[in-house]
Image (cartoon, rainbow, N blue to C red; front, side, top):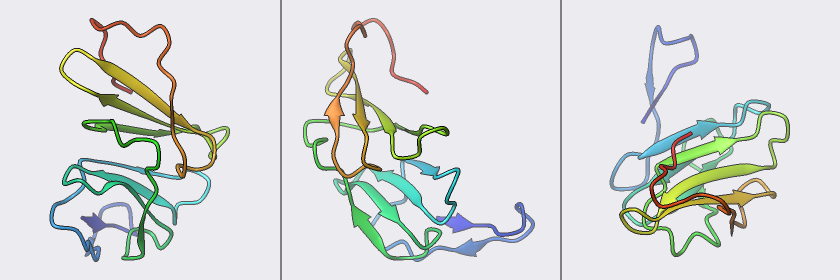
Length: 120
């Protein structure tokens, strides 16, 4: 993973301590030093409070049954609220919500049918 501090003119390698890169990534719009990512190698959702430079902490309690988390979203009006889109299995979309900046997750997909996707 790379980071740019000058709108993409130059890039710096982030100290990614996991075996593979992130499958999805989001940044807290009110505190850009908070970077959240999903790693599809079994680490779940992890958080860095140092702009993505090291210091990664797993915060995905409650997402143990999620097979994949391809989408992460932070509510821009309430940055404590986050959403993830997941698929337990093919054709089984799920949405999870956290109200404590990603530390605990609850399934929140009432009304989503199996023929609808989970894309943000």
